[in-house]
Length: 296
Image 1: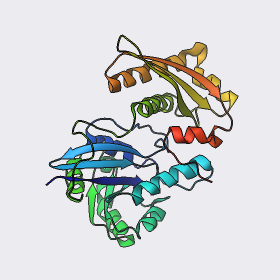
Image 2 (image 1 turned 120 degrees about the vertical axis):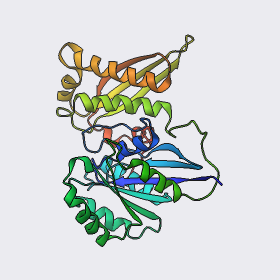
Image 3 (image 1 turned 45 degrees about the vertical axis):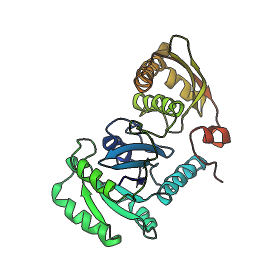
Image 4 (image 1 turned 180 degrees about the horizontal axis):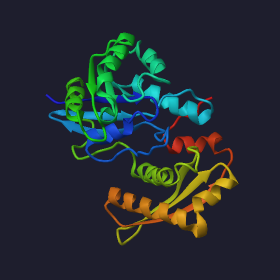
């Protein structure tokens, strides 16, 4: 009998949720950067374990929202949890139960789904604190099971994957066996460019930048020509993105083009330009393009 179901991977920003989803899938399906709130919308990674197909919903980090984009991201995270068969709460074991984590645990108390606690980054934290941290979290909410893992090194990920798969309901698979994500290629391409923007400009550029795909042309030779806009909020940010003599945007474009070509398996021609739009966070069309609800 096959199994299939969704697993909401939730937690505070920078807990390592996207890294964990990539590790379980076995291939990169979610972008990763040191910048908080890198993940914006619910992205589904698809993994197989024995006869179970796991739909891993990588959700934005849950934090206290301050503006419309923040509210949309937090709503996407809680919606992902609300539609799941299993909830995996990922906690940065080094940081402990600080910041938003207690509030997230409180928000999960009313959920009837199986809830697993995943203490991540055990490779960089004091081992003696782990059992005390697990007990502290379990006192707030009795979890079905607790796992100690490192999504970066892979330590403990196989055991977690098996446990998640075993908790899914019986039923037919929703996707072909070789499909790794439910995201469209257009969305994935925009995400890969945004990832390079964050990786190369992490300290200089605020996270409130976005990528909009203008055109997507499949050429006769099998290659794909993509034109994307890097949308920022202020004129002062434009020089940062462009770099001296356009060097930075060329570097971003080269790295993004290589990543997109690997994703698509074809030659890619990527054309980037920068657009300043002070109120892009109020543009309803940009929200729908990246799979977010336009919330009040």
